[in-house]
Image (tube, rainbow, N blue to C red):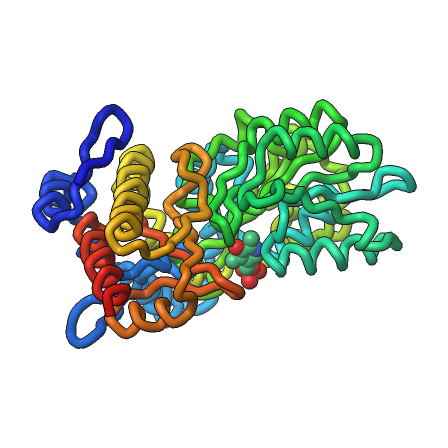
Length: 431
Ligand SMILES: *Cc1c(COP(=O)(O)O)cnc(C)c1O
């Protein structure tokens, strides 16, 4: 069966075709660098890198380096460790900048996602009497909504009034950019902040961050993004898009382990501003003066000025193991493979639909520029089908009430994974 991808690439739902794609793939070798959970003695088909990325085999060595240096040097490890802990976070500036399309001074690895959103909202959500509203996407991740509600209340406003979610049109699942822009225009005199996901966790829709930012700025509104499902997934250009700020976590596509250290972006136009309100801590203080232990906070230039505490070295060691792999693989190659893998998954699902009349609806955008590697499906047989494929060694995830999410990630998933997934899906539907 035939399907055209991009400039006339033909897809076939056969194991030969899948192998023919995998064999010449330059990124194929990276699969071996990760641990796969096992099912009946075989690696599972892991499609939940959007929820918790797999562990690189190198991770233990990165942690061991820090454990050994701690044993060997004690407190002196801050300066004498192989990777001195005092400046440990500085090693992340270059790779993170590359991942999110920023200058190194605009990013820093720190804290955790929701906490970082709060810290950034302290600086960038400063409501006034008339301008106090936050515009966000339909059904943002609950943690983000809790953050918005509590920030709004903290400033003495009513969340029901202050939080505006852009809704999809009747019968649609994704937001149209024109509708987002129209809402910005409509509410421009009351908006204080636009805070969207880069990629929505539920539908997998990637928003047009460039246009949203432009429209926000035209209306005089600050624009930030939660990149939990975007970082390490889609192509980002935060600096050039003039995004004001962003935050992400490292345990989804960035494979840095449960609850591992997050990251933030603050555009340099704000990074220079010393007087911007913020909740300060000693690690955000000018590092040349930090150990003078004096009063009078004087922030570091750039994103580093938002740091609170000294670097959580163990979780950063895990993060480094993964980022080193990303840099070695090359993000352009990852994007190219991601697009093709995702298109192949879409093809295999559509084939199953055609042949088995399976009633699977892909609610993620079909346009590759409006999605990353996640496909969200509404499945006629619901959770029962999900449970059956789980028993057969597929790790996908289920989001109530009726959505199954699949994310083939280019670092460690293969075309063969997708073919095998399709085969199991067919079997289960035929039962
Ligand atoms: C995963 C995710 C979170 C989780 O927040 P933590 O503070 O890391 O627990 C928050 N927001 C979004 C959009 C997410 O996808």
